[in-house]
Image 1 (cartoon, rainbow, N blue to C red):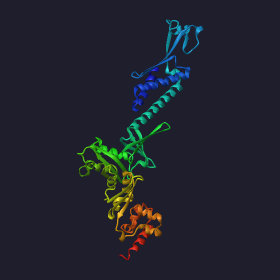
Image 2: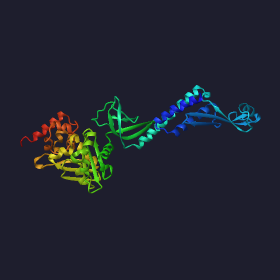
Image 3: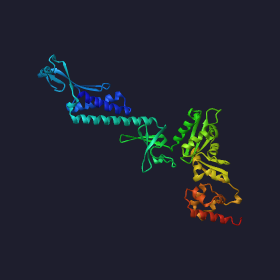
Image 4: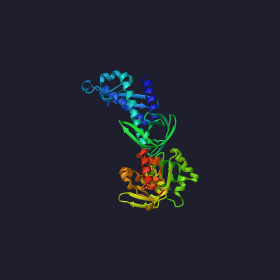
Amino acid sequence: MQNELSKQIISSFAEIAHEKGIDKDMLLSILEDVFRTMIRKKYESDDAFEVILNADRGEIQILHVQEVVPADELTDAVAEITFEDAKKIDPDIELYDELAQEIQITDFGRRAVTMARQQLAQRIREIEKDNIYEDYTDRVGEIILGDVYQVRQNKDILVNHNGIELLLPKSEQIYKDRYRKGDTIRAVVSEVRMKNGNPTVIISRTSELFLERLFENEIPEVFDGIIELVRIARAPGDRSKVAVLSHDERVDPVGACVGMKGIRIHAIVRELQNENIDVINFTPDKFEFIKRALQPAEVLKVELDEENKHANVLVPADEVSKAIGKGGVNIRLASKLAGVEIDVYREVEAEDDIDIDEFAVDFGEDVINMLHDIGCDTARAVLELNAEELVSRTNEEIDPELAEKIMSVIAYEFEDEA
């Protein structure tokens, strides 16, 4: 009975430990701790006991070792046994010898054995949690490939990665992403949180680190360190700008990243839901770098205030929309990449135009500021757009009715010219 029960206990928990990545020595240590806890609950001390574990044979042996003493010297009934009682067990025993008796697991009672099983299972769960935390903390910044097994109502996605549950929050998903249960998902491990003893592994598809790792996976020169990704700015799902630098003068960093007919960059673009990626040659020349950051727009002049981290950029009138980009995304990313706030101004002939500030009485300062923000510094700059574009570029801060009014009032000023 003893051997059968011990084999069941060791076998069942050895299998669990193997699945959870817990080594044999750790399992044996846990088992010994659990059985010593059982002993202490029954005898108040485990000093007089030996716990012998043999995982290979599936055996647990608990020995109660007592010193044989005369009856009048007995002071501790757990650690000592009288000579008379010892003789009944072993007729050959001598005074002050040690008597070892095996204790059956069943002697502790069914309840104690059940509690031991529960304690053992709990210890294994705790070790598993610690292992998950340590493993994925070491993997922060690493791309993983997992399977979607649940999409929550709040759009958070639970991902199965080698039997471990990972969390892809809605905030870390590209807004174009659409996943269903069973789909394969690729993301970067961005953070591991421990709350109330439970690890939560956060993965991301929107972080700049994800884009960086995709470059390393798809472009050997980046992986080998020949090409350095100096700076990255992302608007996930829409556009990214990546400043690159070659440490080998024979290697063109932009050409290597884009690849023949764009084949290398296309693999990354496809993974990011057709996110446009501008690969830019990095330069320490801040003026030149700001020009490059505003690609694909042509830049005529840059005025840089380094102390306040602000730059005024002059572009041809027909390049303003490119410099700003849809919804202002290009200028936002350029500002982030260059590390300065960029304002775009168009090249105009002053006598043929009207400064937009002159319409402050008609529209108010807030509207004038919004027009400046989208590069409309003059009346003709506004007229180059239409009402719908005004609404779109200001992210609907200017509504359709106001946009129509603005176009109408400004157009009136040029009616004589027409």
